[in-house]
Length: 244
Image (cartoon, one colour):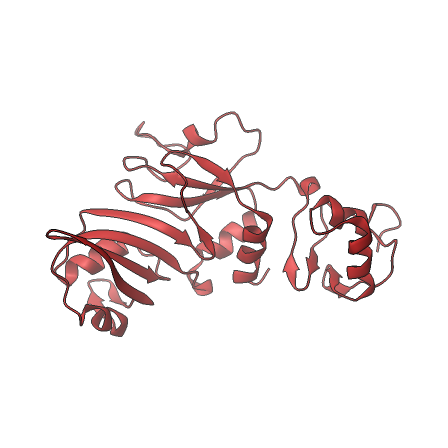
């Protein structure tokens, strides 16, 4: 551990983990790791800008690291890029004025609304978007009804599309209004227009599509066009999701 730096209990307290005294108890109990090693020595100093600190296996973030994690409810008609060469509305309008260079985690097509994450944490963004980590995404789609009771079983078994098979992790009907049906689709696929193509292939073309969750992060009641900072618990859950 570095001779210079900040006392670990002070870093934990500043990150909102616990009070200074309670943080000391966490360290003494062997519940804190720094850069992969359990630390039990009170007064251990760390560099909060670079150290990977975990409490009970969950990674914490520090203000000194300068990392930003935002949730955006992307409106329809906005393209998922930070600079659109065609001049269409893009994501820059929602982070204008921030000094950090943020980038988006994955994409939503222009007609799809809902949750998209913005961050300057490159490793986390890479893992969340990489198919090998199989991060689940949840969508709510408005489709024409009726929906057969067997459809969920069919989608979980897998549907063959032109670029290969796809199966959902979960499917359920969440609402009905006249001839319209709202369905929830959960899958870890990231292929282009995958939800729209999948539902159209089974006879239910999508009228409206909203992404409500990325892994453990929920959009909740965030209004279209608004952003919010992720909570420390949400950030820790994302780290856990991809093994960081």
